[in-house]
Length: 48
Image (tube, rainbow, N blue to C red; front, top):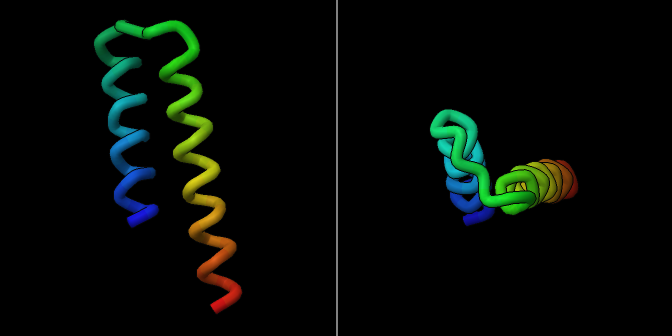
């Protein structure tokens, strides 16, 4: 579930860069959120 969300957020961020259509800081917030989700996933994977 978390991986899917992260992938979707990263794709949206890349599309924002390619199309040069940025909605202010929203694209960067999506990128930061995706990175945080990936880090949480990695940390949880190591605990189990």
